[in-house]
Image (cartoon, rainbow, N blue to C red; front, side, top):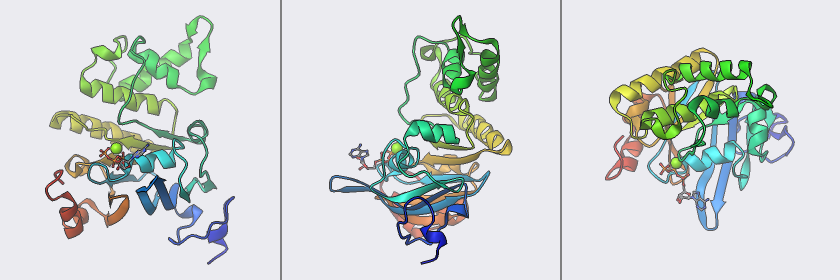
Length: 265
Ligand SMILES: Nc1ncnc2c1ncn2[C@@H]1O[C@H](COP(=O)(O)OP(=O)(O)OP(=O)(O)O)[C@@H](O)[C@H]1O
Ligand SMILES: [Mg+2]
């Protein structure tokens, strides 16, 4: 074992051989058990700056649990997470946001009595927040700009319940963008969207990358991700079964088998 492999606050030996500086985000032998169930089974991967990694697997494969372990919502049972070269394993979610990591949720709940722009303003970094009178001018301007970036420019003053489903997904994305992240983990952004809506959201995500962001995007349906991702990482029962370009993944017999009788690839 090299000295590099022992760096970081915890000198846990690594089996994967990945080092903290191998990517913006490095997961090393990440594991999460719930009682007798292994939801994340020693996953190791690195994500490069401005890469869009597709994180794919059938329902229940462990995608959201992996996100939860990376973003501080769960403490991993074992393994390490490095972000921008720093050991961030087990830090809570607020610290992760401060360090530049954001996520969207599969089951999200915007504040139903606040407008779209107000919901986004509330996610802006706290030092940009409020005057006693309410949302300050600069905060409102920033929040409106983020809403326009995701295509909610015409719905600023609606409440979330007035938005169509696609609008709710955009709002969830806008709230994550408002924290000004370097890395964003996006959980099922295309769920329930039409082909045109998938295309529209794909363009939003690509523009975020073009402006410097790194993205990990989860979906159980690979087809929606094909025009978006640079590379795919496929898991089943918490363990990696394949990794490669979208073409390599769709041709992979292990991936095809994992989806047999279940979701479409
Ligand atoms: N808090 C929890 N307690 C116990 N088991 C859990 C918990 N969270 C997830 N699991 C289990 O871990 C496994 C992985 O779940 P996870 O939600 O990560 O899958 P997923 O890949 O995100 O699935 P989906 O495509 O349906 O969103 C499942 O068997 C699930 O029931
Ligand atoms: Mg999930």
